[in-house]
Length: 70
Image (cartoon, rainbow, N blue to C red; front, top):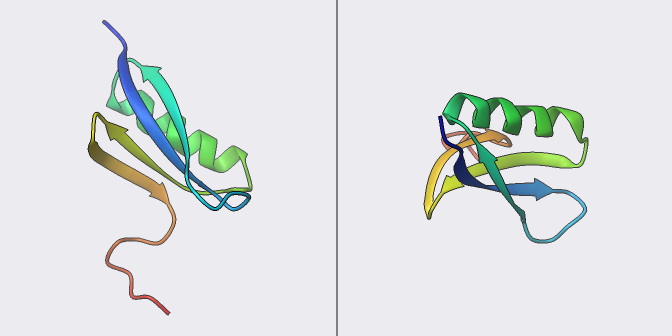
């Protein structure tokens, strides 16, 4: 099985703009696990949105899209 390229856009409280990280993993399950692990292991990561090409696949952490703003 080949590797696929994904882009992680990391919302990090230390920076004003998201940090972009290129990641190669075998499948979507591995990508979701890796994103969740990165979020869990770094207290500065507030959310991670995962893209393939220019398409957003999913987001972990952060406020849900349909959650009302305060």
